[in-house]
Image (cartoon, rainbow, N blue to C red):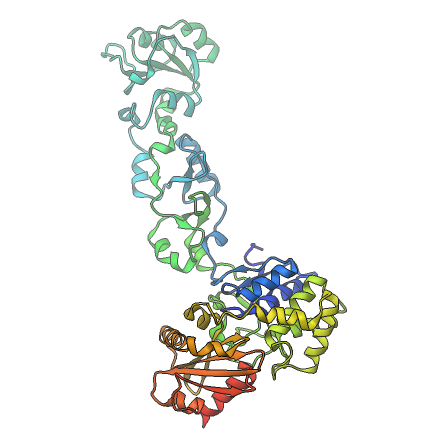
Length: 539
């Protein structure tokens, strides 16, 4: 099983709040504690809010990694590649290609960075693999390349001879003129002696036993090497000595490890070979083929704290949905097959997870208890929200004892970390907890901003309304509503923007939806604001 196929992402909704982040972390630990060989990996579908960052820091626990899109990437699905260096003889590279069945062979430098690749499937390779090498001595092939690439044994290496002047390979024939830049190939010892006497750049003698060649030619005034095969075998082997760095294709087509496979399919369809995959520094990670990109492994997925398709992490269809753990209404999420659903009418998803600890006969450790308590407090506004149940209250007291904190003072500290109404940018406040819903053929957004002083709202209202309208337009929603909730007084002021004049005024029951109105006792989006809006839409 590949690493990706054995991975199960545990993820909350986009724009994660504290309950979503904590539930992903704790659920991954609970689910991964059995005999399942899969790796349960908590992730966040967006950046954590300040309250969440503070809570995880207090618990001494690292925040889950932010992964906003779970579609498979080239780095996750590439096959490990055997690479060669630029100095590797072509023959060795061809042997690797044939032995491993590769369509291409990456070429990397000493720092593992991709510098090119070799593929017999590229049109230019057909020429390079069968060229007349004698015409390329001194350009793509040097005399020392022949010695190393063909395993030639040196017999005579006189001092002061500059082999760089060798510019052409020639089969020695008595009586033909010989130039000082020619590297001569000779069959037999006598022919080699005659060739050396012509004072060429060097001589390669073929056929004789090494000892015989060495005794006969060791004192030659020109460099001499021995090749154990025939002259024909040597002539046909010459291309194998070319260093791949001199004939490789440029690495102009490669994938980054973060590239999504579906985006690479058009590129792979045009290429006759697999695509090299590199990291951000250009270091080779592997190769990806079109076949692998068309049928990538599917990770598992456990969703927590949401039941709406529009709130799920991007790339949802690329994973196998295994379970949903939530405390909201059942939304429009769909699955290919049966999945386990744990949806309970409690004040937070963290409360459900605390119950699952009890059902398993386990107790969370102090860090887990602190996280769960903080999430319950955040979602129930310190147990004052209408969503709060007696079970939430019981669990909060128990978790506070395990975590070693005083419930009221800790709860107030949690809520205080979520008040940014005074100074945070309006666009950031609106986007922080903005969720999408569908009803009656309409798509709409409902956001919530928490504060401990609703008196700050008048100075911020215009900016918040402008940011809400920008978010509505960007998301293509029909209307958008923002709750500014005073967690101390348990009241909310609602403002709204709309594509249809008059609709939001009817929804909020006020003369100007952008100015909004106060809803005393309304603190819950799930159990108060959303039911109010749905009832007004039906009416």
